[in-house]
Length: 418
Image (tube, rainbow, N blue to C red; front, side, top):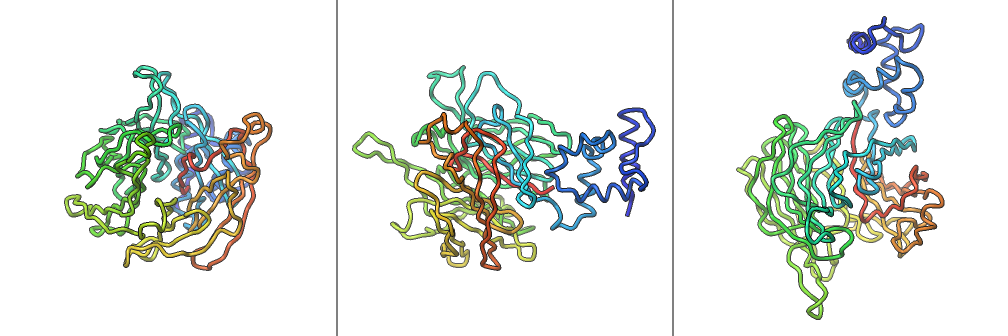
C-alpha cells in the first residue's frame, strides 16, 4: 500500500511552508490517513475544524483517491443530494442515510438577471455534481412573467467545495432525460421543454439530443428523438458495445378541455438509442394498457454489479412496480407500508441497492400548508426502505436541517458515491 503521506506533505508544504504535520500524533501518516478515510464523508465538514492537518487532508484530492482505492465498495458513502429550491438561492444538502447526517453545500453562482430555477437535472460522475438546464424567469425577457428554459451547466467539485461554470448546452431545456457514462466521461441529455413548476401546463417541447464531453468541455448534437418529449427520464442499460440510452415516459402533444384548459397527452412507451450504432433510435410499444394509469410514475434504477441489465422500479401512488424488459411491462413488486396523506408526496431514490421512499411526517411538503407554520420549525423526514432481493422493509427518521418548505414533486435529487 503506497502511503499518502507524501502527497499530504507536499500539499502542506506548498500551502503553509511549514514542516509536515502529523495527522494523529504517535502514528505514521499513512496509517492515520487510512483511519481517517473510513470516516463517512458526511462528517468531514465539521471535522476539518479539529486541527490544521485534518483540514488539509480532508480537503485534498488525496483523500478521495485514497477512499476509492483502498476502501471496499460497500464502505464508500452513498449519499443523497437534495436541492430543496433554486440552488443559487437555497443551499443544496448531502444526506447520509447510514449515519443520519446532513452536510450543506455552497450555493451555486448567482445570475442577477434570472430567478426561480426549477426542473433542472442533477447528476454525478466521480466526485463531481453536475447541474444542467432547467426553467426560470429572466428579467431581460418579455413578458417578464413568462418562464424560459436554460442552457446553463455547472459542476460542483466535492474535493475543493467549489462551483465551475461549464459550456452551455446547444439547446436550452428543462424537464429532460439525462444519463451519465462514467467510463467515457460523457453525459447524455434528451428532450425537455420550458415548463415551470408554477404552471401546471403549457410550455414548449423538444426532441433534440446532445452529448457532453467532460474532457473537452463541449456539447455535440446527436440524432433527435422520434417525437417531441418533455418530462421524461433517462438511464443506461448494458456495457461496452451493447450499451443503450433509454428514455421513458414524458408528455408530447396537449389537448384542451372545453377549448380552454390545456391537458398533457402522456406517453406510455419508451425509446432506445443504441450508442454504438450511430446513435439510431428504436421505439418500444406501450408499457401499460390504456386506463391502467395516466402517466409514468417516479423511476429509480438499481445497478447490478454482476449483470449488465439494471433493475428498474417505479413508484406509482403507494405501489412499487418492477419493469420487465422481456415483455415491456410493469409488474407490481410491493406496496409502501405507510401510505402518503392526500396532501403530501413521496420522494423516491435508490441508495446502496435499496429503494428509499421519503415523505414528511408533519406534511410541510404540502403547498396548501400556511406559510407561517412552515417556518416555525424544521420538518421530520420519514424514510421507508425496501430491499428488492430480501423483499423486506425498514424505516428511518431524520430531522431536516433547513426550514424551507419541501415538496417532493418539485425537489431535485440525485445520488453520489464518495
